[in-house]
Image (cartoon, rainbow, N blue to C red; front, side, top):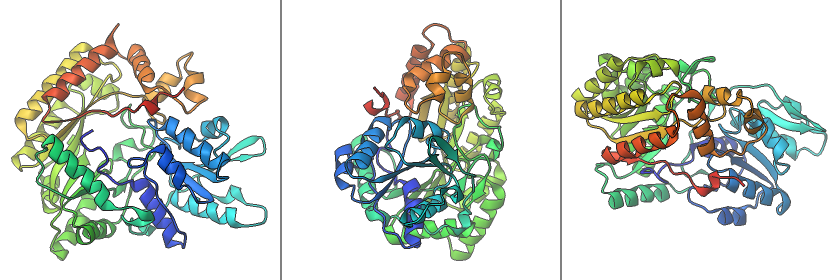
Length: 448
C-alpha cells in the first residue's frame, strides 16, 4: 500500500504508555519493521502481549509457540480480531494463556499484577479477560476504560523510533513521486466507535468492536497533536478514528485551538458524507484539516440501504462538492461485493467515482472487496450458512479470499465469476486513481 510502514502501532503504544505510567518497563516489537526471526530473538520478558489480525495468523502462531515452548513466557493475546474470537484462540492454541477482549489497558495491568502474586490468583476479577479454568473457558465481564484517564501515548515508548516510520514515508514518497507537500507525517486516534454503529446497527462489513462512541477529551487530543509537533517536528497527522466529524466535540477542540493560537500541522481525518455541511467544514478548516477520507462504499442507493448505510448519492455529491469548494482533498473509499450487489450496481459505483474526481481533488483511493471479518454482520450471515459454521465458529484461521468468494456467491447477484469480475473492476479503478491503495495480502494470510 502507499502507506506501507508509515504509521506507528498505536494499539501497542496506548497499552505500553499505560503500563509505563504504572511502573512497568515495556519493549515494543513492531512486526511492520521486524521479521518473525527478529522478533523471536528479541523476546526476553516473562510476559508477552501480542495482537492478532486476519493477515498475521501464520506469523502469530510461530511467535507464540516459540515464546511459550522455548522461552517459557506467559502469552497474552489482544486486539480487535481477538475480541470476537477469544474462545476459539484458547481452544485452538495451547501456547496462548490468556486473551483480553475489548480495551486492554486496565485488564493487562491487573493481569500482570495477579501473575506477580505467589498465592492463588483471582483471575475472575480482571475485566475483559478470557482464560482457562480447568477444562472450561471463562469470559469475564466487560468494562470500558475511561479514555480521559489514559496517559499521553508517547511515540518513543518501548524503544520505538518515530523517525524510522517517517523515513519509510519519505522513501515511498520519493519512489512513487507522491504529490504530498508534507515531510513528517504520523498517526493518531482520538475517538473510539462510530455513532452509526450503536447497538446492532452499522455497515454490513464493519467489524469494529466498539458499539458505542467514546472520546478522548478535546484537551487530550490537542495536547497529543502539540506534543507530536513540538517533540518530533510532525507536520501532518492522520487521525484514524472511525468518524471524526462529531460537531459538539469538534466545537470544543476548535475553542482550545483558538485560545492556544492553533498548530502548524495539517490533519487528515475520517468522516461520513452525511456529516459534511457548511458548519462542520468551518470547524475542520479551523483545525487545519486538508484531507477527508469518505466511506462512499457504493453508487447504488438500494445496495447502500441493504448494507446499513442509509445515505443518498446526493449526500455524497454534496459532501465532495463542499470539500472541493474549500480546497480540501477527498480520499474516496469503496467496497465491492456488498449484499445485493449486481453488475449494474458496480457500474453505478464506477460512474460515481468518476463524478467525484470531477467535483473535487482526490488523494489516495481505496477499492476493496468485502471481506466478512469476525464481528461484522457479513461474518454472521456467512457463518449461519450450513457448512460454514465449523469453518467460521470453531477456529481463528481463515483464508480470506475463500471467504470473499463464498460471500459473493451467496449474498450478491453477480453470478458465476463474480469475484473475478469485481477484481477486474477494482484493478481498473485503481489504475485510474490519482494515488491507488492496493491491498497488501502477505502469504501469512494462507494458513496451512
